[in-house]
Length: 378
Image (cartoon, rainbow, N blue to C red; front, top):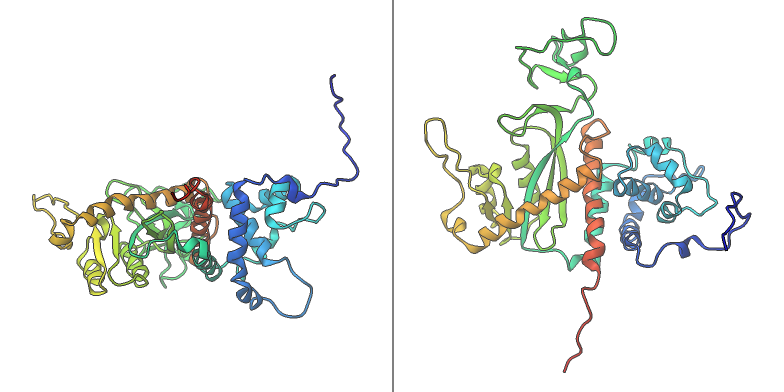
């Protein structure tokens, strides 16, 4: 018999929202790991708020909501809040009951300088990796490092000559010749550099290009340290875009590695200062050899020791180090950080580190799932 197409809903619902989430849904494991990591940050959260006054939105809820924005490629915080209004799965993950009022989208902006910071993001990543069930997945000996470009939230039209004082580019000679925000400017045969120009919308954005033949962009650089056993991000950082930023960030992150560890990297890290620094700390430099040939036919001298380049572990590290690109690819295509939506180095650092933590959370449910039944001993 054909059912009726009723448009009016029931007045009451007696099914708990917890019961509507499938038992094997991947968000269940993600939520459990997220809550465990946030529990370790309880003291840090308590220090951010005063003991008197009206209770604010729980910081755990805001961070879980920000995590959902990355996991489901939601473009803006307003769209995220709209999704929270009708999506029971989102409400369950954040911790909202079916009848609770959703907080306003402006709550994220008001808490960005206090809660959504680089320190909280780093603490969340460290707490996640410090969980007992996650520790067994991490390698303590073999690591890889790499960097990626993060396009800044600033256009090339905002990259204008600095003033005579060298501080405010808006008072320089690069103002558009005609009224309006889209005034025409002829950039042909005009030399621009970070020394003479600066962005009027994002003062920390730097003009940078990844390699020869590629376009220059206003951007930041993101850096990640990956453990080679399962490809999880062990450390993350974002810096200003400079020619030596990748090696400098890798040197800082390698300071936490134990003596005797290996560190894989691409040929951009084949520099004497970087390789010698690793050797001084007892870390094997599994860096790809930069055999670039100059226009005079002379091959560039590598800093990697011959005995290291001839070892079996060196070949394995060069093969596994490419897995770090999977994290960068997820962060840009799914996490929405192809172009960052915040301005300023501090906010970019927080967004990048939190996105790398989200990438780990996406990977962990499958890594923690049982691979099969254990055969009984005979």
